[in-house]
Amino acid sequence: MASGERVLITGGAGFVGLHLARRLLAEDAEVTLLDDFSRGRRDADLSELARLAELVEHDLREPIPNHLLTGRYTHVYHLAAVVGVQRVHDNPNRTLDVNLRAALNVLDWCRRVEPESVFLSSTSEVADGAAELGLIGYPTTENGPFALPEPAQPRASYALSKQVAEFLFRHNGAGLRVRIGRYHNIYGPRMGNEHVVPQFIARALARQDPFPVYGTDQTRAFCYIEDAVTATVALARLAGDEAVVANIGNDQEEIPIGRLAEQVTALAGYRPALRPLDAPPSSPRRRLPDLTTLRATVDYRPAVDLAEGLRRTFHWYAAQPVPA
Picture 1 (cartoon, one colour):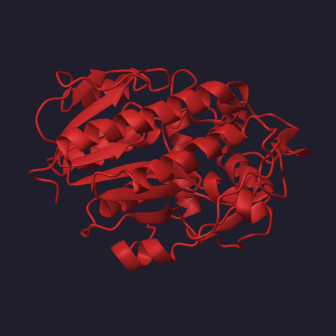
Picture 2 (cartoon, helix red, strand yellow):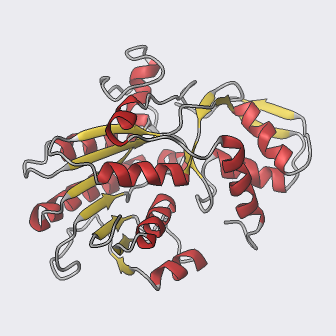
């Protein structure tokens, strides 16, 4: 239980940050959300949360001043980053600038306040390069080398920023208790419009026919946000001084993207013809996490299967008065 915890969540107005804050507040933690609102939104969900949590606006490209966050924090969740395939592709230099400066500034602040643990949000993309080059297999573990198979592609900036951030956190030089979670295709309500699940939902709500699908035969294993939050909190609270790197995802239901489109359109009550299109540049043909480390350290078991998670997500988006 979180009673007595004082928690900082950077990127707290974003997708994972808001769901994480809800969970911690429900467990009686004291929560501070830090965001620059370049992507996180001031919407009804955040307004409701702000009645229970402290909301601080700050651009993490700048150091965190002592007066901005006072007192001691027990846990820090560093989630703030430039994310989203199109956003990263269009702004590779900004992706590196924001993500690396934010990592350095959060680490500098943590050295001063000495929290019990620091959680870094990382990504499956740090391992995609090695998997695509055949240096590691599937399901992908956390122990393989880092590689950038297509450095000429702007999208590589995101993986590179997270690879460097992982290195910085693991070798922080301050004895911080570091936990790194590599998120694998997390989805759910309020995740924006820049990822495949909400994009499919938007097309299904518009009843597009034919239904465009990029990378029809590529496969993914999707993880519902509530399961990802459960794993995140458990990992952050894990005892022990050694740094821990763990995949966070759901390895039970690897699915082709074309089949995902069929499941989403079924929720909308129609069966359009799928129009296969080329996958985006640098999009991996497969993504499936090995969860051995997570299961061994925190006894993690995903609770929400894909059908139920898609149903919840679809109905949330369908209920929004404007595109969410």
